Image 1 (tube, protein in one colour):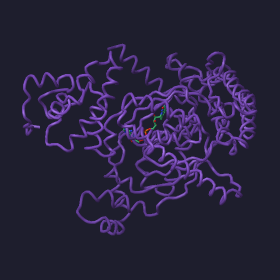
Image 2: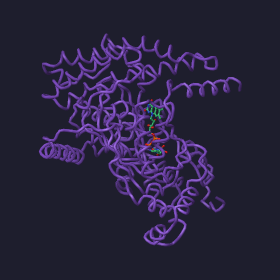
Image 3: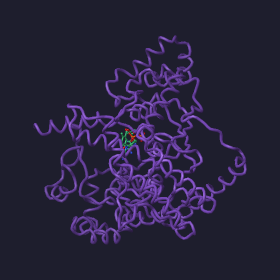
Length: 542
Ligand SMILES: Cc1cc2nc3c(=O)[nH]c(=O)nc-3n(C[C@H](O)[C@H](O)[C@H](O)COP(=O)(O)OP(=O)(O)OC[C@H]3O[C@@H](n4cnc5c(N)ncnc54)[C@H](O)[C@@H]3O)c2cc1C
């Protein structure tokens, strides 16, 4: 940092810049109080200029009349409408900077927080399917009961094509029945959960109530249909949003296409220059490309596979793994520490004894004192493919992982549903199953006319098949996180199975997975709630 010999700013320049930068005299500084488009354009100039960022901001934005800088930032938060008009008026300037100096990745330099409320779970999953550049968060079925009514109606998506058909009444009756059953079972199940796991003297009432309520909602979430309305918050960069908007436009679901239009409207007010291509002919063409290919492939898949009956399968199947994984991973471990070729190192590694291999792996992974101490990139050298058949609840949770490939089949009732054993023990399974079976009949009924729309009826208890392809590094992350005690039992099972399969074929590579939890628990959230209590006590003491 001592080599920082940047020109000094005059006092007046420092004053001008001061609201927008975190310091005016050090080599490392942050930007603040600037609209996304200005930050993006500013950064895009950075790569084609010899000037410092402060100097570019001063000369090319603050002092440039066509940048409308004073009007854009001058209004501050009280005057958002003025700011928007100013940004729109200066659009030609920003477009010139962004197009002239940037490439596609420039749209990653500005971001937006977007709230999407009252959307179905079909829509929520579509949004969360984004991996790069978008960070989603969704209302939890574990902490929030989903039976609130608005104007006397449960909160689920009334799918327009079904509502316009002669199945409308049946659709509402089925979904109302699912929500009624959910509501009806909360109280008796909570009483059963509390009777089975009574509070001990070391557990506070707060922690106990939270843990038992979470357990109850976890056990009942299987009744919620995909039409259930939820809220999703997204933080993402412009490029990721643009691609998401195109994908939404290509969707067979009207809800998703409408959602895309609403999202565009809002993003146009925050990062207009970064998402504008989604609504041009270029964007429409891209969407047509995606939907046409999808539809044509679907027809071909039907032609080839339509007559084959699916066989039953276990929850998790290991479809593919690399028999040379160990050699490849060890070669990748050694690679950055030598100037040999990868091929030379691989050849050498094949000559090593088991003991030598283990020593290299263990040294590389080191002493892991927490699950956050994850192995490095050498563990990305080998991949595993799994075929998973688990309830939609588990899919919804595991789907949120992004550093891997996941792709599912249709939401359907064809693979049957899962009943949590606790519901059987509590003698409440019959009511639960009745609602699910009624939903299955309705799904099949609607499915023959409106196959896409029928997916809204499918409750989370039904199973869906999806494939997961992931590298060993993500295996460590996913398995240790998703097998942890506080997790939902259905995804814990998937994580534990993934562990068992890989451990059976690659025990040496899995030997450092110290934080996988293979136990079963009666009250998953309790330990986490007790830890919250300890933290609350510490806060109170301070
Ligand atoms: C017990 C439990 C309860 C949960 N409850 C909820 C809930 O109520 N609502 C909800 O929405 N989600 C919930 N989640 C999901 C959770 O928030 C994550 O979305 C999910 O676990 C994916 O985790 P990840 O980002 O660590 O994993 P991955 O996406 O697999 O990523 C692996 C790692 O890569 C890095 N990474 C990936 N993407 C980014 C990025 N964009 N920016 C920075 N780093 C990145 C991070 O280090 C990350 O840990 C819950 C998870 C658990 C285990």
